[in-house]
Image 1 (cartoon, rainbow, N blue to C red):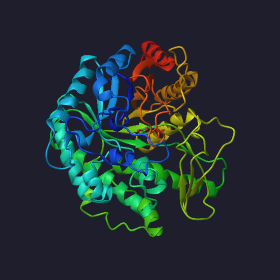
Image 2 (cartoon, helix red, strand yellow):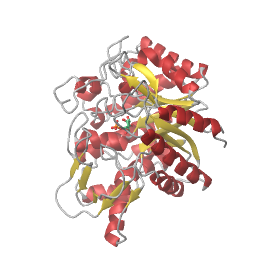
Image 3 (spheres, rainbow, N blue to C red):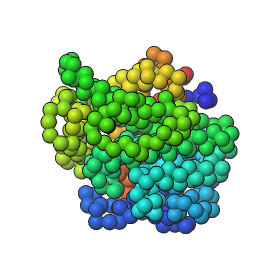
Image 4 (cartoon, rainbow, N blue to C red):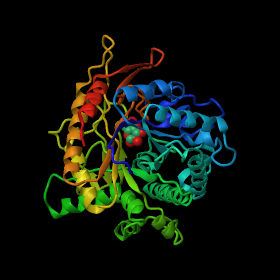
Amino acid sequence: MANNFLWGSATAAYQCEGAWNEDGKGLSNWDVFCHSEKNNVNPVTGDIASDHYHRYEEDIKMMAEGGQNAYRFSIAWTRIIPNGIGEINQKGIDFYNRLIDTCLKYKIEPLVTLYHYDLPQTLFEKGGWENRETTDAFEEYAKVCFREFGDRVNYWMTINEPNYDTLCSYAIGNYPPNVQDLNRRWHAMYHLMLASAKAVNVYRKMDFTGEIGLVSDSYSIEVLQNTPEYSQAKENADLFFNRSVNDVCVYGQYSERFIQKLVTDGMDVSYMLEEDKNIFQTGRVDFLGINAYDRILVKPYTGGETVLTNNNTGTGDAPKAVIKDWFEFDDDPTTEKNPWGMEIYPKSIYDLLLELKQLYPDTPIIITENGVGHYDKLIDEKIEDSYRIDYLKGFIDNLLEAKEKGCDVRGYLVWSTMDLYSWINGYEKRYGLVYVDFDNENQRIPKDSYYWYRDFIRNYEE
Ligand code: BGP
């Protein structure tokens, strides 16, 4: 990896590109879901989103002017292979060539995610990630991307957030296919991990000099009481959220403890095949991308069935989780939260990085997302988002402290480059360094946080 620290920001295809049916793009599960009646919490779509498909040059130029040297974006599988498998769409390839070349023109390092939640609808209809064949389709798709873009992309990420994606899709049930069944959840998640390992193996065979990793939403898991029961809940939550992903892609295997826990729960694990062990072993990552937003506070499980809820409206309660025989979410009423119930707790990134260093000392980390959603207000052509500056500053300070303590962190990317579609939450939950005036031709207006980040990067010395 290069020595220069990566300071930049991140987006994902469905959330910002728009152009949902342009230039031969196929339908993804999110296109179909957002157009369906199931999309009833904030019934908006990503049809236009931030119109990044047409305005990418303006966005990348603003990043460069904002001192950023890295841009993480994802490729829409359906632009490259509209039906998931088979025919390749040259216009899709042309778009990502333009995007990558524009990054290079502005001296921005492209970090490319292959899969960020949007699955070709054709594969979704055949069982999506519960169907093992999807892992083979992903491998083929990855191969096309490596072949077409691998000469210019030094950082690849296979899958975004196997944990959070499947938690929402198969446990909370707010993302398509809107299921609430942990057994199906673990099944789909296993295939995401397998798909990732297959792509890593393909990449290595193709002999590129770049690095390949996976993006894991990881958390500092904490408890408010010091008892054996609380410690057990903490260990369970760590297995559930973090180690179910990170052990697999860093050590190249599932921990016995984790598999044992699934078996004790009566989960069917017959899809874990003997022949996969080698794929996981040789498919270990070069680096771990970490999406770090908050900590998770847990307490011992007391009773009842598994229930998970999320706050997608910005008006209701904080997210809740009771995972039968594992743990329950706890709450610290003294900490600040954003309107969607996310705790503002910057030290969590310090604690997390130290934990990761201890578990995976040889694996470099890139913080692939960190940021905060708010109802930003455009007043006199300005957005005074001091709350976002405070949040980012808090996390960056803690990150740098962890780096001082020897954590091998190579980069930090703000979520998000500009305002974009927030899954189920719609467009009013804004994360961008740049405001997008969705009601006024998607005009771009840098927020105060954009200028703060620019000045911070300017003054940073490694
Ligand atoms: C991460 C996702 C991003 C982004 C972010 C903010 O989990 O990788 O795609 O959306 O979270 O979350 P949300 O939009 O749900 O507030």
